[in-house]
Image 1 (tube, one colour):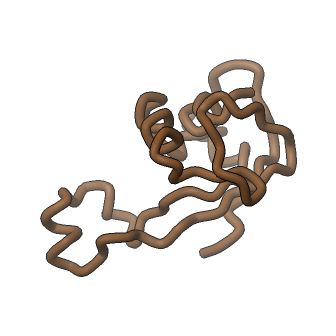
Image 2: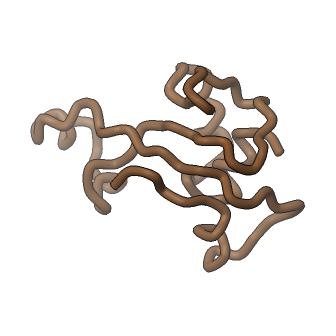
Amino acid sequence: MRLDKFLQISRLVKRRTIANTLCGKGAVSVNGHVAKAGKMLSIGDVIRMPGTSTPKAEHLNDSALLSTGLEDPPEAEYEVLELPTGNVSRARAPTLYRQLNR
């Protein structure tokens, strides 16, 4: 499965276009190497990408992040546990990966 599709199906990013943008900027790596959106994933791969500093950080705009001093949110690492063949429910999405750092 393609990296951008996995990020969208697993709901690590909201939309596939956002996943493509992150990959295009070199912000996503797989197994320690910067990865393009079309990178084919395997079970056990480790994805590293920008995370959020707080659960509600996704609701903040850029000026709010700058005013709080959180210009670069910490990176998050996820291990791929399952590669689905189609779309998955919102409840099942978190079972596709395991967060390695918290």
